[in-house]
Length: 303
Image (cartoon, rainbow, N blue to C red):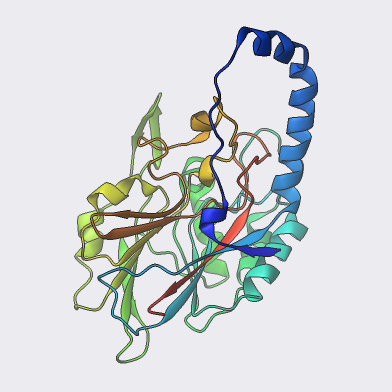
């Protein structure tokens, strides 16, 4: 495991294709595909890093220090996120202690290449080992909703991890209180090709902030950020996997966002509003990552 800065992950450079390149490249397609798949599988299953952010949102009080560990898109299931791998992720998170742990949804693998099923009780039991001063809090992701939302609800409840769905809690000691809000999933129901209906209620969620204390908003999909007001100091999202497969001409097809690369990964600041998008840990569609190593995110506010 290694600590990195988010700017150390570089996007691939785009290069034009020549006729000679196409001819030579065609003969190497099979070999490249096999080696690329092996590399991607290894990166997904073996690599792990802690990415650190120290944003300075204008809506967060200076000197009010808060550290957060973020675990997004676990997608527990082999070949790259078997139970032993989940256990190692939790151990790594506990090795960099924070005041609070945030879980951003998509807890179990749903792709067609799953080689090891990790029961809900097993991954939830591992997440229950996460340690922090203020506890662990969760939201749900689209895969939880699409494949077994009731099973995920029960698993988290069984290990006493609160799930916030269009709800908010006031946490912290006197003089250092803050609101932690969690939004319902934005694409919870599939209605057809690229058509969805969410269970998110941003106005209703923000209405629960009944004091002037600063607020942190957990969301699964980052697209809602265009609607998040200045009232929220920091929005934290997952879902995109950072694109998961960062190969030119292929990469953008793996970005599940209506905004393309705008909210795909990292620290985004727009009009003074702050968003951090985790690249996540597991995989979707195929059990491989290229150029987007699995990561635990650690955020420090008020430093």
